[in-house]
Image 1 (cartoon, rainbow, N blue to C red):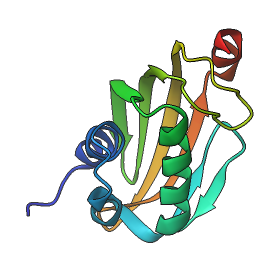
Image 2: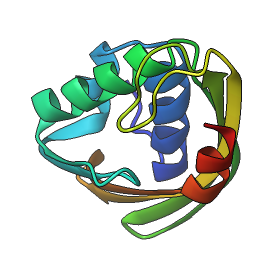
Image 3: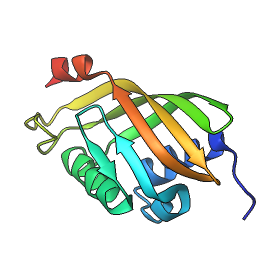
Image 4: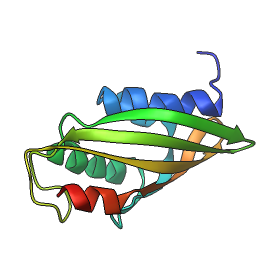
Length: 133
């Protein structure tokens, strides 16, 4: 397979991993010691902890969909602005289920090494999410 650009890797992260729930992309995209920090105070280290985090998010919003608005990339870094939407059917972190559609936006910052994502830091619009809960 031809090496992917950092922008392409970011788009695969959202489309294949999150939108399609295709967990084989964890091994394709991530370094073994991937670090993830999320807006809900989540911090994971390694692929297995990330999968546990992903499973908890998808349990709360099984139809969660990520729409990437912009990706910018320079050297070993990329940043993406995205919109997230889904139906909140189960508890999601401290949020009790509302059975309503929710929508919020955020920015994610990625670091790469040798064609793999080694670090992700997500900053979501939690104020807007709180208003919908």
